[in-house]
Length: 594
Image 1 (tube, rainbow, N blue to C red):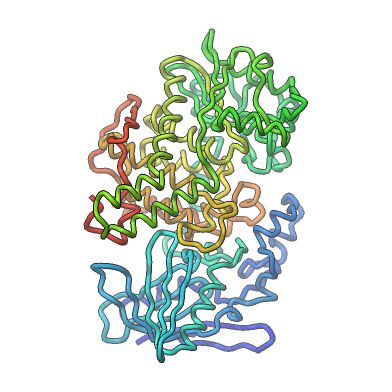
Image 2: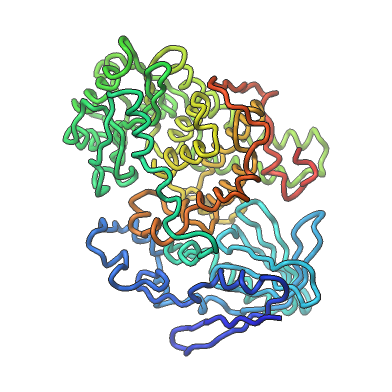
């Protein structure tokens, strides 16, 4: 039996310690990696062991925080120095039994609460390993007490449902309160990725794998019509874009600045993908701010004209709006709108409405609820499944991506995709269209680059969209499973074309889990600006460094993969789309996954 002393210094009460009894194997080493710097934060900004000289919130080289960013990154309440993790831990340990679902034997041992984890330490005679749960992965918590014991039910963001049977009523209540408080901390810089120091990985590894410059070099080999601009170097032009973007060579940075003022959130049209076989491009942006007065922007019109001029001779363009025509028209009332046909010669506007926001989140919630009623008759269960309309969202997303891909591949047209903000359904369409057309994006490395470039660097607000999963009792505010919908669409592609993707279901499941709760920093924050402010790239490990370890690669690769230069055109007929059982049923009915 090993013992580990963990500092639990709490302000105002003096230092104290707790000793965790750890039995068997290298469990001691595991716990040390969980708490490499203890539970006390010394930085005023909440970063563990942060010297004042390099504190991200004292350095003048970083952009200033807006009020919204301050609340998001630091949380609405004081973060540690004023409030230590230990003050939120009402009871540090208790004897418990853990039930993890059907066909999995229960675990008995000592339940311990740390600043970021639940640990179940089995007894000295047990053969099972140390069990860990990242507290950020808890979506909702329920407690019940009866007699001299209690039960805590944890519903997790990865759709697991866990039950803890705990000895003692007060211990049950205190542990439930501790889990609820620690799992709902809103500060980014007190989250576990800033503490995680796994063996074999170095800080900074893999963050350089997918910079914008890398993709630009590929584009530059295929065409001279585009350039890499650092007009957004300080994020002042567009807070949700990366520092560098690919734009038409004929458009200078001053014109880009005026374009940014004409687009919602500053998201002016930038290159997403160059399709070399047809010489056409895929672009993304946000809606133009035409408003009730039907404003124009000469520089924005010139930018889209330059796109066509830089493509093959006689090229035309499609503006693919992911809102309905009625919604786009109504957006003018609040200052938004659409591109006027007369102002953008050569471009034709198409509307392909895709659900986003609350309707998408509610569909996800209903789907997870339906997957919990498998005991019902087949007809009844199928009726519940159809009523949630999740597969309808999958069909609409794939159909819209196919439309964009067909316009480029078969009609030789350029395509601009946008909705309102350009950070959700826009990215869904551009990334799926690339998977359909581009064989390199169907490799393991290419798919990682696609996720990094089209979702993370492109400004999908992961911190907001993935704040809760399907079990939270809180009323949805900004949550929406847009990224999960993308992963489901990719899974459908892999099922219909089993030889075409170098990666398998394991990589998609890993990305789903890490997007909602992760020890890595890759999915932290909602933009590159916020990651810069938090120094995510220098203070946390990249998910790609973990997934690219040889042991992990062997598990994630598709053994049936055969490279092909051809596009893959999925069927979106109802009989061709399936429920992703490997995700939605993996915890409740593991034997039904395939």
